[in-house]
Image 1 (spheres, rainbow, N blue to C red):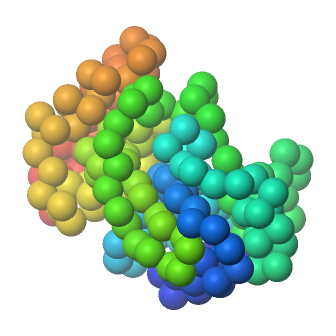
Image 2 (cartoon, rainbow, N blue to C red; image 1 turned 90 degrees about the vertical axis):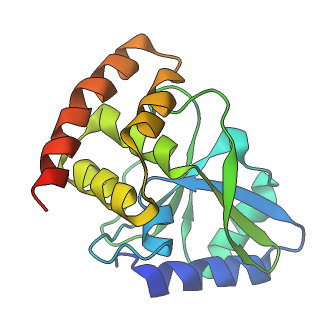
Length: 179
């Protein structure tokens, strides 16, 4: 089962009801775009940026079990399983520090996300077809300017990530001009 907007909102509503203390999850990847109305995107994974999140691991894990989703699996995941992936600095390219904006509130669960320029810049490091489409969507949805993405890229701690993201911006510009 892939999460579209209605399904992902339902997951967060149920989690917000299950959590008995205020919890902040910083989501990135495709989840913020889906919640913001991106229609063609679906996922089974909800990426949570550990550093900008505030939660009790045990309580969140138990709430996930009650809602029927996996909490931070480390091995194989059954096709169709919905899961939270807790992501720490390393493989994923995000600046060490960044501001977040509130995405939604569901009971005791507050969802925040990196600014769309930061999400876009991070997607340019990997830059597969979906990532490029996501960046173009964010640019159009939030009227992000190239200099804002360039600024976000300049804050990445890894020089190789900065180089790759800057090079991949060309694909976004080509796709954007195509409609």
